[in-house]
Length: 195
Image (cartoon, rainbow, N blue to C red; front, side, top):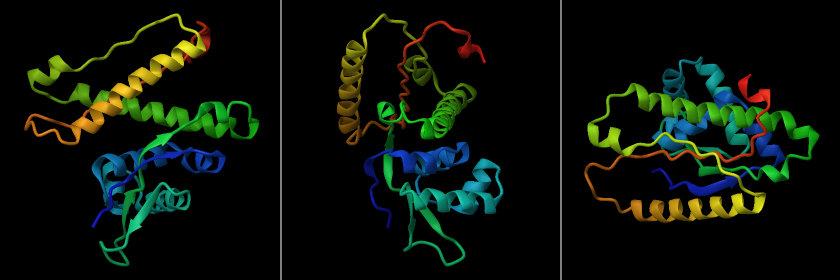
């Protein structure tokens, strides 16, 4: 029987290196959202080679992101599940470490790509009008100090955590899993963003 995943895993330099691959981010995302799966199931969903997926599963397990469900499957059919619901990335812990600059950039690109894929999948699906009217794709440009940005994000996080706790008991038959994706960062208007 599947255990309930722990709340989050805070990345350190070692675990960041272990997750800093686009396919590992996607595999972990699938296990977190869709629940336990075999390597063959994941390979089919992702259109990847089973051996390649198996290698990435072992890497994710080695770094503590996933674990094998030993009460499911056989020796030839191994089931895997996510150990945590979320990944915490304390960016400030890494920005001054040149040895993790590239893994950090790889992880951020992969995580943003996963966010984009989820949003694009919604745009391609045929959702009923109430959902079409409820969703939001928006962006704000605010002038904030670092301290004020931290305060704003703390308010947003507190609201989302309260809704998440309330939502676990959501009994409305129209309820669906909803992704709320948030990125907040300063921008200088340089040309790097267009690359």
